[in-house]
Image 1 (cartoon, rainbow, N blue to C red):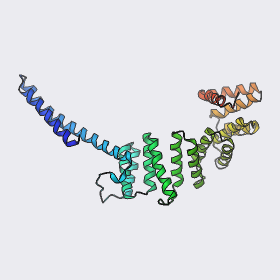
Image 2: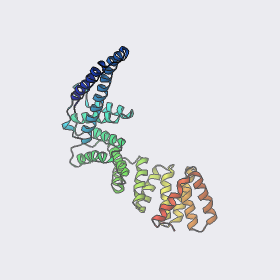
Image 3: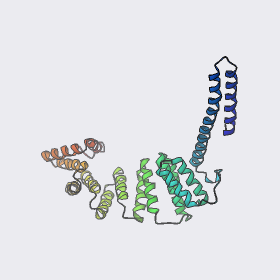
Image 4: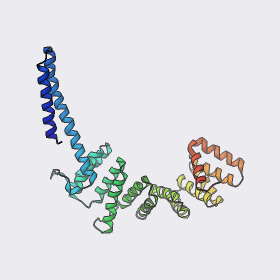
Length: 305
């Protein structure tokens, strides 16, 4: 049902109700209220329906990503950048569907814009629609392969966004490849080091994990998380001395981070230093009571007795 049909039906039903009630034996005050309230109801309902249909049509059009098929009027006075800025503002105000609409219009103006495609992918990421986000980010990759999208200084960020979307789908191998590409273009990116380390950890690629953490700590020596990963590698590969060294640096850098204390407790337990192990274990659980899950994960992977 389109908007015009809805208005006609609503107006007809309301007219019938008013007609019937006006011929019933009711007070004049009640009749007067009827003639005031029903037009108001018609107007309010119409406004709500039009608003709903507009949002629904916009959402469906953008969801299909059929940019050339969207029937809309593009104001000649508004540029590609105007729509991109409008989309960014709408995103900041969490008006995601409106932001998607703006980006789709921008893409009608510049279909091969990596900036617009990246923003559209991020908007679907915000919506939790990771499959669609992956599809959109993939268009940037396709443009790179066939040279239809020129490389710019922000491509490291596009790869990072693509990798983060793969993580949401637990696609660790695909995410790893994107973070590697991102770091190749921009090595000064702590977030990429940490997310790549997470992927390598989930893939149990211990040597590569250790190597990337070594590279990361050379650039970011004050990050306890990379040292923490190195400590875990020491445990699962039985290089306890190297693991202990990295973990002691981690707790020195951030004494409130519980995970390194737990890994140190594991190392001391494996070396039969039970009293020392208990001290570090208690410290870890005091800082973070949820850390018992980490021990169970190691046991499930047969990496700890």
